[in-house]
Image 1 (cartoon, rainbow, N blue to C red):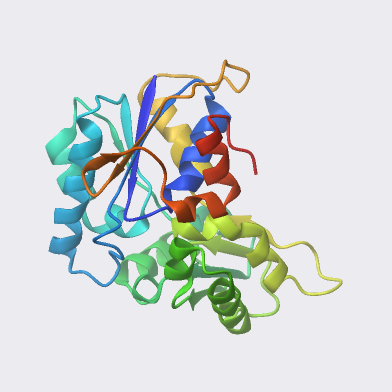
Image 2 (cartoon, rainbow, N blue to C red; image 1 turned 60 degrees about the vertical axis):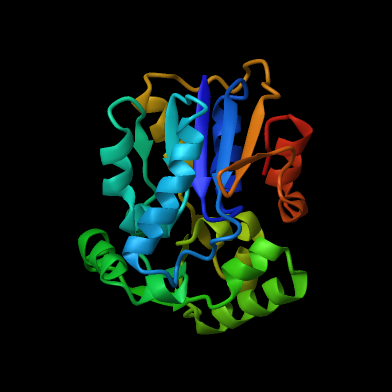
Amino acid sequence: MKIALMDSGIGLLAAAAAVRRLRPDAALVLSSDPDGMPWGPRTPEDVTAHALVCAEAAAAHRPDALIVACNTASVHALPALRAALEPELPVIGTVPAIKPAAAGGGPVAIWATPATTGSPYQRGLIEEFAHGVVATGVPCPGLADALESADEAAIDTAIAAAAALTPRDVRAVVLGCTHYELVAERIRAAVQQPSAPAIALHGSAGAVAAQALRRIGAQPAPAAEPSEELTVILGGRESTSLPEAALAYAEGRALAAGSPARR
């Protein structure tokens, strides 16, 4: 079994780790666009063009499924990616986990990039899945960029700024950018109020990994013999290693070591 993942940068690490937890025996293809990121400020047409390059580079390695591990690409490019690659290659998009977060009754905070926070797409998800629940969009300027470069000081600053905008009574936080899942516990610590019930965090990585297996008719097998097969594609060109910044995170280090990633 071979699963491909694509993103503008290292946000795909969380979903790759989730795939390896469910199927340690899966070979992985990671395709990203370090020279073209971030995708958020680009026009939908430009996002689609960059996403197609990443997807086609991954598809050349003949995976069984392709996970679009990027909210921006899923919003703007998913129809084009599916038109280009399906039915031969199932394409699985990423959706912010607003529905499961709202199921707890709220209040809910949705951390996302500034562009996503103000988008009709996010407002539509809130209206559809969080009706009757207090849901607050929290823009996180600079956080994805800081995570992409593994700039610890900038990460701390961006998390603190977003936490200051997060209502103190929230019971759940949606991680609306795949990069944010790499520092999920740091985000939880920043928003958790003393003596309050533990805040639930809702990311998308586990859901998209499980959906990829369903699309290809595979079952989870967490005890399977681990695969060491990892193909890294940067800007359409195969690389011998993960980007250096990826090794700042547990998910990246585990992938580089050829073992199933653990939280």
